[in-house]
Image 1 (tube, one colour):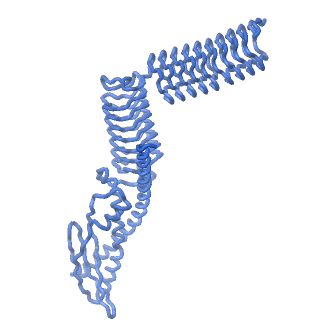
Image 2 (cartoon, rainbow, N blue to C red):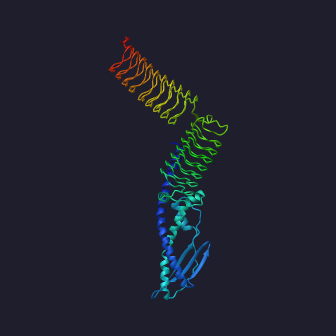
Length: 539
């Protein structure tokens, strides 16, 4: 492992540690806040009683205000038989706290509590007569309601809740995930302007919620389902939205600067005038999305789906569009050439030689007469695609979905179609010479006039299929299922049919010269005019 990889690993480890520490601190702070809310309630009740006592005890208060902090000093003398021990009660009535905090909560908050804004009290001890014992008792009871330790806890809670607000320059104090869900589960749906920066909402689902102008900077939003939400003007700076479902969402003027949007789904979403600078949109689905006047400078759009997307007026300076998918209906800025930028134009007659389209969703596309020689289409979805006379020579189509695709007269010489789904596909007159079709599915496919010579069809099921007039010479059809298949006038010379099941197959006028039929089943097969392996014609 080189130094750069070690540095990256160390950085990732540090980020994980900080995130874990942040989550633990947040959970702890919520519990502390609850306890402090109860204490403050008691404090307010005792304060009312204390003020009533002050009204009847003139001359006991000496109010001093220093540096924005107001204090009430009350002298209390504990009465006893032989002692005059005196004690001081300090009532904090208003505290102005510093606004600068550090992100390292465990160390910096403790430092803030012990070293910032120390309070110096100049007090005078006033002796109280023994008959004031009742007032002293009430004052003493009040003093225990807000001790120094409780003051420190309240201060710490405030500091913790200010961390994200100060780091992001927000005027609103952030709330935690627990508090957010409490409000949502109670039926609240209007979260306009809410500050949940840095919150972990991973894999959450929200419905009918309004998060316009919300602060979600640095939030963990991986795998969320927030489709159709109002996110207009919301800020997601540095947030992780990888694999997020945001179909039909309103993200107009949203801030997604430096956000991770890897494989996020924005189908038909509104991203007009959004800030997507340096955003990672690798493999993102932006089909039919509105991106008018958005800022995509230095964004990563590699492998993104831009079918019919509107990028009119978009800033694409420094953007990476390598292997992004677009059509002639995709609207780009004036004078911008997506092909020169590395994008793939999916259209008839397109030149896509050796294109890397593994896993691409190309269902329903028209690639008639396009050149895809040597292209990698592993696990691609080409369902119902138009591939008439398309050149797919030597292409990798393993595990591809060609269900209902039209491949009439397509060239697939030497193509790899292992485990391909060719159900209901039209392969009439297609050239599949030397193609590897092992374990491919041909349910209800049309193979009339197809050239399958020298192809590998080991163990393939071709039962009930139309192969009339097809060329299967030298093909490997060992153990294949050809029951009730139409092979009339098919060329099966030198074909390996060992162990093949040809029961009920139509072989009329087919040519089986030099074919290997060892172990083949021919019960009920139609052999009228068929040229048998020994060269004789069956009557």
